[in-house]
Each structure stands twice: as structure tokens, then as C-alpha cells.
Image (cartoon, rainbow, N blue to C red; front, top):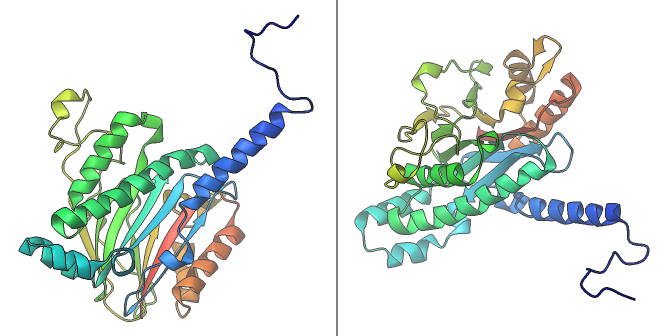
Length: 307
């Protein structure tokens, strides 16, 4: 006699391992769907841009890249036509000559850590569209909201290191850094990494570690500390051939025994590849990183070369 109150068992021949493999494949497809296709890489006169994600597991991991080509992603002409606020119009006009670059690193490098950067991906791009409507440009306020949102929904082990910057056609790079290693600039003129006073660059806690002081509802959020308001930094690619490099801490920590990859080996690799386009520089760095030592973490980078 059959007990109709019990759930039916697995179909004949079905194996739990098969179901798990299908679920994992489905998750990898979802995670891969937010990876930037080549067509999303921004195109601006005088700049050559490309990037690489090198996940430790070879599929997907905790690192993520988002490109914001304002001219191609948004109808700036229509937005300018509809905008009534002069400040919004001014911001939209500036967007014509710059592109946004976001590099994120979720704590951890397991495949399932990609769930966090999937959430960041959609929240960030939704926020960018809203920022353009309200301000005509992306402001630090977007990251205050993202920070508080992720603090309220994620635990401390899954905070996100983020660097977001906007590169202009004249080589000016304005950026916000939340827990990511600072960018470096390779000088074509001197054939080495430029001397940047790190003490003059402001960095903040990673996204989601502490709620924002600017959150109007911070009195409703219990926390041991509230983060100070985000501010931005500025670097400039002064001459044709200069290279701006954004990277996650997987590159910073890459080592062969006691020999670190950063900065000497990185500088040598950039010097060797400096005449290549951005795509070639990314390929050369990826190959050199692998040749130097096996990776111990996800490694991701964005290259911007002034042409």
C-alpha cells in the first residue's frame, strides 16, 4: 500500500550527483552571463582599454569587471534632451568623453562566491542609470548606498573590495577605492612604474564591512563603526604610451616562494609589453603571471593605454 503523504522518491536511474552537476552547470552559466563581452569594452579617442579575469578555479570566481561605455550603453542625446537641470546636463555632457571602469574582488575564490558579484553587477548598473537621471553622472553617493545595502545583507566574510574610476579622453583618471590595491602607472618616458605617493591616495574599507556614516537611516543599523564618506582620487596618464593598471590583490600577493611578483617583475613585464596594444599587454601579463608561479588566488586586471 502506498502512503500518499510521502514525497515521491527520485526517478529510477536518477543520481544525486547528476542533479548537483546540472545545478553547478546552471550556476556557472548564470555567473558567466554577467562577465563583460568584448563589445562592452569602452572606446574613446586616445585610449586603448582591455582587461582579464583569471579565476583560480579556471571557470568563475570572486573577481568581477564591469565596463561603462556611457556613449554606447546610454542614449546621451535623449537624456540631454529630456534633462532640465543644468547640473544634470553638464554631467551628461562630461560622460561623452569618459568611460567607467569597475573592478571588484569578493572575499574568497570559490565558484559560489560569484553569487555576490552577480548581485553587485546588477545593483551597480541599476544605480548608474539612476545616477545619470538624478545627477547626470555617477557620484560617490551610489557607493554609499551599495555599501550599506551589502552590509545589511552579507556577513563580514563576504565583503567586496572595489575600485571604480572614470577615465577621460585626456588621460585623467578619477577613482574611488574601497579596499582594493591602488592603481599603478607605467611611464613610457622613463620605462618604469611612476612614483606615486600612496599617502596622498585615499582608500576606504571594503564594501559591506561597515555601514556608511552618510546613510540617513544609520540610527537603525547597529554597527561597531560607521564608515566615513567616500572621496575620490586622481591620477593622470601624461604622455602617449603611458599605461594605467588596475588589479586585484591576487596580483599583489602573487609570489614564487619568498620572491614577490609585485612590483619588480610586474614592472619588467610591462616594460617588455609596452609597445603592444591593451589586449596584447593583458595577454602578456597573464602569460607572465602563469610562468612566474602557480596562482593562489583569483587575479584580475584592467589595462588602459594612452595612445
